[in-house]
Image (cartoon, rainbow, N blue to C red; front, side, top):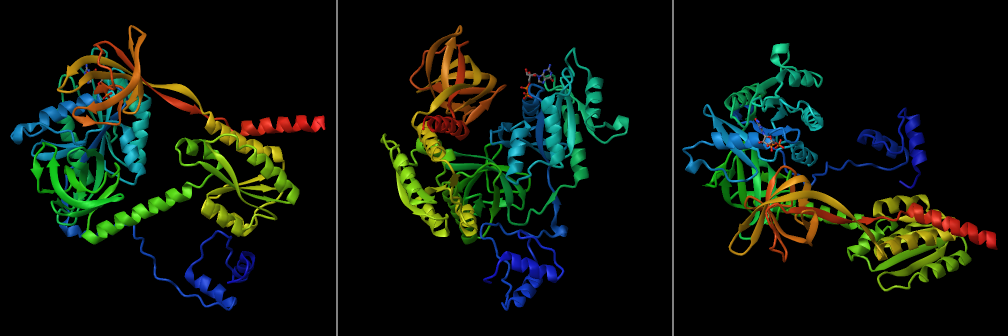
Length: 581
Ligand code: GDP
């Protein structure tokens, strides 16, 4: 409209609308203001976001009850895994094909001819991670509290996570077989967190159980069903499938394999699907008992084959028209790519890392300054930093005057950062720099500018590392497979990652230092295994391990030299120089 924001705001004010510069105004107001400036405004149709999955309107008459989906949460060692294990062992319907569950991230159990789905990753981390991606999977949280230990920090965390997600809690007071068990104390402690059992006039279902002695497991399941009934969980099995990716990985033989929990509708072989940035056609489905199935309705977990890539846990899956599924996935990929490119503009702050990744060999700089003399001094000093081959400083442009839009466009095209010496970007340039993610550094002292660049560069040239121990693992059994020797292990503390460096200790003496070849839970390759879990580890070029050896997992972490430190150094140097002269 060729007028300033202030003029528009003034006009709005006269019309009785108190708006700030960042405020949205409705179309009618905008049209009125535009008219005041002699401009015709026309309303565009609302934009359809090509990355969004179209919503389905469900007909209430077609909704049918569906089984509840349960996550087991609670403090470490209170018996989450034991509880899941005993439920799986005792309640997978025996007459169905051997009754052995596959590990696919979730499984269905039957009790009194009704079904409950358990997510097989105990703990609230997975729960929160999924929520962070916008997926709410859990209908009911089972909070496990050990009767001999009571409410602990992670118990409270779990309560808070469930509450903030609006998920109702069933409390399983576990380990009641133990001599030190004190159920009343646990209840007292839970009262402090607003979990009040029925006998005290509250509404929280609390069941005293023992996972180890299999006491009251049925009672717990029955109570989960009672709560589920009250929640009136429903879905329409006749509509197109909507679900959530519980976990996914690349299988050497089968390609991308995703465990999907169907939340609504029915997923069928041959359906075209989209999940996150991936798409494809359902080629095969395998249920939690390892059977091939043709369809999966609401609250059924299945492994799905046929996606073109590995989606992320928490991604929403939808069955759609083939072209639409593909186009949504591709638009999302595009969006991701542009965001990546935008965020990949060079800046002094991440220069270290970028060089390390090998994604930067040239440090391109645009210099704007108040006088020609400063430009010469600055570029001379910056180019003098070019003593090594790993990174080269290039001055792609320099000039006298404020940083303007064309400087920003140039910096964007050349992936350069801008050094502004005694000048500032004008308003348009600043806005454009924000949009293009250009790092503009403003200096008044030449030494500061040079100090920053040097610090960023030298940091990357001589990165300093420190060792960080991630976890401790005990080898409990040495197992021989056709090709490999696997250390059947138990994670004592922390975590072990498939990219951890490892050190093997025997009687506290280091006997080997190297890397992991593969890290598995049951048959599956995994990225990490946390304390309290068993895993199988094979090690690159080392077979001489024994039962009782300790594996220490660690990583090397970069120690960052901060720009602030470098600045202080530059200032000190500057002060010293000034004194001299
Ligand atoms: P998680 O960290 O919450 O998954 O806990 P685990 O299921 O790994 O259990 C921790 C320890 O408590 C294990 O040694 C179990 O054998 C033990 N445990 C679990 N449930 C019971 C129980 O009901 N009674 C007794 N006595 N021990 C139990």
